[in-house]
Structure formats: C-alpha cells, structure tokens
Length: 227
Image (cartoon, rainbow, N blue to C red; front, side, top):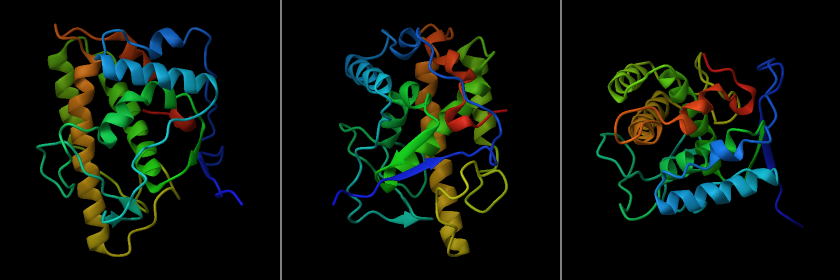
C-alpha cells in the first residue's frame, strides 16, 4: 500500500478570494537568465514541474537528530544571524535556497501535497517571500528596498494559535511557552536570512529592480491576499 498523502490548502472560509490561473506567458517570468547557472538550472526544472501541475517538495526529509518546535523541524541554515538554527554546510543548499529557487514555480499553486515536515516550512517560506516581494513593490532602488525589508523584520512574528499566523492547522499548537518562543525565534531567524538573500534576487548588481522577481508581488500563494 502506498504512503498516504496529506494535502494542505486554504479554503474559501479561510480566504474567500480566488487565485488567478497560470498565464500562458509565465515562463518568461519564472526563468531569470541573470541567475547563477546552478539556480538557473533548478528554476528551469521548477518551471517544467509547474507545467505538469507538480509542486516542488523539500529534499530535507531526514529528520533524525533534528529538533522540532510546533511540529516543525528546525533545519540548519547557512547564516550569521543569531538564532536557534544549527549551522549548515556552506557548500550545500539549505531550506532557504530551496524556497527562493522554487518560489516562482510553487507560488502558482493553491494546494500543496505535504510529503514531509520540511514541506510545511517550505510553504511558510514561500508565503513569506510573497509578503517580502509585496513590501518591495514600488521600491525603485536597493537602498529603499533594504529599508522596507528591515521594517518587515521589525514586525511581530506570530506562531500557531496567535492572531496573524497565516496557516491555521499547518503546524501544531505550542505545547508550552518555551515551545512557542523557540519556534518564534527560529521563524524570526529564517525570515531575516531569507530577506537578505531575496534582496540579491529582487535587485540587480547596479541596484535597480529585477522585474522578473518583483512582478511576482502580485501573485497570491494558496489564495492568500498579501496586504
């Protein structure tokens, strides 16, 4: 018997707005020729998967020895930002690399079949990138965009069960205050790391906006309207 699949989606009761379907010319927006060769290859692969209506899943399926908070694995990160995340091998990809590389494919989907706990974190990061791009929309220089991202980082980070958490039912409710604060600190750390890497995608080396990224600020991941 095959392994049971678990699907996560935002219902009309959670968010009554409808997502737009994928447009025929979306491939031009998904594949950015300015990306490094390895990221470009993964982006092309993501586009081919999206045409087949298959979301990209996290490769971090081995949870042995990984601490969890609210049912979410606190995966290692390549970062100098302080927080509870273990250090990742700088020569290997981490969950932030996955989320950014495949964002422009996964953002088109309204449902996500969860194959591992890491997929839940991938869903959260995909939504967060959507939020960050929305904040960068209209920021015509890297300096202005950086300020917008810094302000986003100063906002409160809700955890499951608190107002403002975007995915009711995706993660388990905190079992204790320590569990809640551990998860909050991890989310804050991974959001800040994601923001820093996203800036290098959203803006070109000369500080001008990269339209092939900022255009995705208008997308609604899983029917959630980003304000």
